[in-house]
Length: 309
Image (cartoon, rainbow, N blue to C red):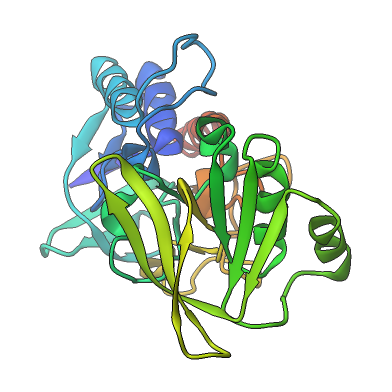
């Protein structure tokens, strides 16, 4: 089946793009993927999205966006894109179930997945004390003990940020030396609220009926297991952009994020646009994703109009 525009991904970026394109009578097709709604569906409370003074849950916010896109004429299809052929027009999408679609314009909003440790108690407690976003969830841990896992610049930055709320922020890293830049290390080490548990390998997230209570670690020096008490655990070991299905056909930076022409959503292939976390290695917020989704829709609409002029 052929469509004027296909959007891959249904997070804030993809659904915002769908709303704008649908209102422009483009009738986009949205491919939901394996996690409809994106990472926000794993967030219990969203307090920083404008327009909701009392907050809103992540799943509810994404469901509202979905309904809004459908209301204006967007089509949403479950499935996962296995491969895309960008070499000729129209672009061809091959789905994992064997289906094939073509499109004049393509918007990629597949996001970036937070890297996880793969230890017991981690995945099942996402949104229940385990978080991958300090700026999203730090507020909920006011005057509590927090653990940040990681040794890079992101971990140092998030540890610093979380000291605004927490009574203590403990950095856990499996090595004795940190990967973070010296200036970031110095800032963190100079903060009296930051404690350190280096040379510790995380083994298990410990949780009970009331949520996370600690992190079990292996002391790499003594070989003994230790329990570090905490009310919240923040994973700060990086993100992986969800771009494998593109097979390297679009330009990326050294971390794999799609590159766009500055000030636009246009990728290195005319007619293919990127928005949300798949092209944003810095902000990674619902509101910035939504804004970039608007940009992608406007860019795609202009491209389609020019092609059919």
